[in-house]
Image 1 (cartoon, helix red, strand yellow):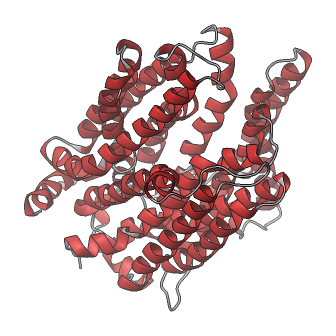
Image 2 (cartoon, one colour; image 1 turned 45 degrees about the horizontal axis):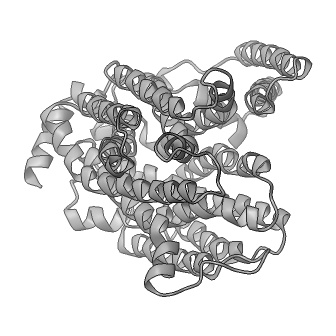
Length: 515
């Protein structure tokens, strides 16, 4: 009993919800700092206020994944989380631009990001549940298309409302401009409609059906199941947790004693917390109380399949590069191409506006490239296709330094858009083939660690490097991003893609030809 392939429109229906999710996420990324500053936040405090976003994903996604693996009801396995997460996200988007105080806005960011993560995390596992191995590259590529489309709309929405519909983009001090408010209302509409479209237009396989599919396709994950890895012992938790606790504690003390950059506390304190979590898991196991979500998620983390461990390295360097771009592109382009770092000048604001257009370009390119990546993967392999796409991104990053006329920087965004489309699809397609079906959700959630950790790393060390090593020149942070993508491309070629070993490449070729 093999899982059947799905037609184009069924793929469309099951992925269209990601469009709304990305609209909400894009509005958050583009406008929350503006709302914070409107309510009186200083520029130096923005990173602390924003720390909610990665930490929320770090906590929420594995928990939601673990819970959705064990859920089955009238709406199915993953769709209840789509449904209730979309309702919460809609409410948060409507409330956010009406925040009366800064602390209220910071709290709304936590709620909004948690709601988006509740909705988004099961969508990755949903593709693994619904599609056979030979079609998953296509499924995740469809998600990339909707992500790109949603990001373009979210980036441009306040500008569209202001320039096409005459909605004011200014307001009294302490008030959010009407263009931003209406953009959030529109985003709430798109979230609700697109996610509900997926909820009510798709049917999920029952746990029994999934179990039969998994047994029939056992060869597709031969040797990759987490159950084939030895479960960590009580002593292993204590030893590993003790090492993390001691080393991270020492680093934390050194940061304090030597008055180093405060951003470094994010990594050192995170290491202390991870050490304490391992020790707590060991104590629960020792007392026979390991039958809980916390202990099971820690067990799953230590029992990751080999392919997932290899992809973790790819993800780390890929996302480190992306965060260097999101943090420093405006500073780099305005300083290098417009000759100013003064945000009060007309030249700086002209450059900053151009960066917004450039970001829309790479998201638009990603939406188009998403359809080409499955074809490239079928003709080569998923490893080779992803490595080539990452190298396109590295070339795009490097060209920021090479191109002198800012009008031609859209060329840079073509390579970055190709890399972005692949980052959002190919690693997940490879990963899903290595995971047991009954743990698809929790492992997709744990996989998010390797997006959040490079984000926290970038937030902690890039500022130190730019100030101390690059003499404040942000353009070199983008060159560091290029180097990071080259490392990710090399690591991709070492990943053990089980679909290739089991004839998945031929199946993917057949699926691409059929389309």
